[in-house]
Amino acid sequence: MTDTERQCLLTDDEVRSTGESNVKIPELGGVDNGPSPTCVIKDQQKTSYRRIASNTLMLYIRMLVVMAVRLYTVRVTLDLLGSVNYGIYNVVGGVVAMLSFVESTLTTSSQRYFSIELSKGDLKRLGQWMSINITAFSLLILCAVVLAETVGLWFVNTQMTIPAERMTAANVVYQFSILAFCVKFFSIPYNALIVAHEKMSAFAYISIVEALLSLAVVYLLSLATWDRLIVYSILTFLVSLCIASAYVIYDRRHFAESRFHFYWNLKDIRELLGFSGWHFYGTLAMAVRSHGINILLNLFFNPIVNAARAVAFQIYHAVSHFSGNFFTAVKPQIYKTYAAGEYEAMQKLVLRSTVMSSLLTSLLVFPILANTPYLLGVWLKEVPEYTVLFTQLVLVNGLIDCTNGPTIAAALATGKIRRYQLIVGTLIMLNLPLSYTALLLGAAPQATMMISILLSIVTALIRAWLLRSMLGFSFSCYLLMFARLVTASLLIAFILYMTAYNRADSLLAFIVFSALAALLVVVVYLFVAFSRSDVKAIIKMIRKKKR
Image 1 (cartoon, rainbow, N blue to C red):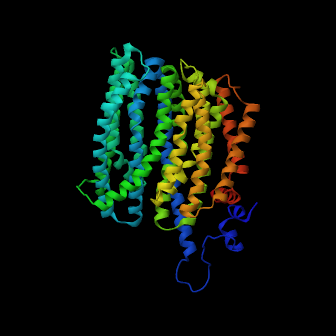
Image 2: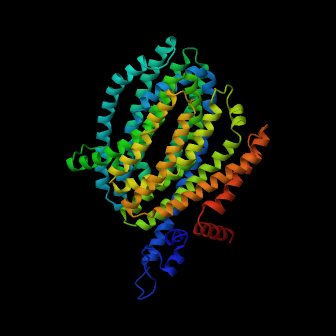
Image 3: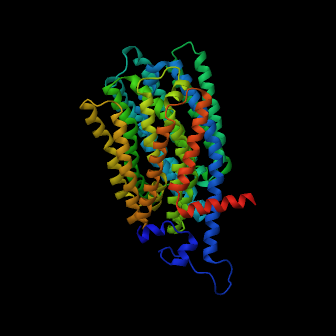
């Protein structure tokens, strides 16, 4: 192990005693002029960690409700609509969702600028950024609608594999998908403001309301006597409208800076567009990987394959909420730590949050991987072909992708992301041509996911390598941490495959095997994935709780 790698395992006290780190920690002693800089930094970090823990707890309450409802509603919706209609809804809606790369770009931009201005305490400036974002979002909604009603409409009606008798329903679904996109898009600055203020309880309450509305949609769909695909698209739009309105109303009641006033500053616009433009490229790449592959599968196969992929991704999205909720709580702290110039603390936060994201995702991924056939058989009345394999592959891909959030936030915090997005975005974009080539040569549908897994590993490492020049982060520290995560995952997978894979044949057996798998994940992570300093911190925290 090199000296740099050994430093990654040292505690703060060990770093001070050895003097081997480039982390500048002032020495204690001298004249007593109040709390030392070290104590102040540690107190700030403790406060940040407590806030992250509190916000994560609120988001997990939200996640448990949303996940349970989502899994139930997917099961009932697939049964009510049938595989063909469900596949049509997802692939047609996916054409509109291709525009979501613009949504994701401005969401991240909003959160970055809002968090940085809040860390400075400049509410006037925050209000100006809010107004600029609302104006920019409104203009982009108009552009997106024009694009969707021209190129998108042509593509749906002339290029997609949709049964002729379902074309009218598909067009109605498409129009309501556009409307749902518009209202969700408009609410994004308000959503981002809540994240910047770290008011995660608002997310929890609104999401629980959204979950209840989703249950209402399923109930009303079961009563529908008209075309259920059309009814489902209308009801889904109404839910989007209600939730978007809830975010706007909450912000206007709690944050004065959310009230729109026309503000136009050319310098700010150039800065926002400069940041958003390159981030746009990165999020476009993610949209191509997600929705582009879905459309590609439709061109080569049929809506049933799209339905199988849609079911697999519903499970993936439910699982990704575990790490996603944690990352939502961590992201504002990464932005604010950067704004304060505390780069060493920022690197420490990135590394620790990456391991925690991986652990939280693994707690769900491995129990599902070990019992996928049983789980899908119980969950769905009709299991579309390829669903089991798609689910397992997409969960493996998700286990890799869950490590990216902290490094992405660290890069975006700098605002100088041209080279970063150009390299990473291009690598992600390769999913489409490589998948197209594989399918053209006669590969099975799952080849697209295997290609995605390989590219995800490469891009995860490239992201960390780029942070070396952007922020002076130690790539060897990240590589050591990533190697520990891979080793832990392979060890867990091997043990589960040899002892518990596909053994569940009843609900009790499923619960027992899942609990044992989760316990195995925790034990392996403690001994393999976590660094020595992290384990010591966990033990110290447990001892304090017992007192």
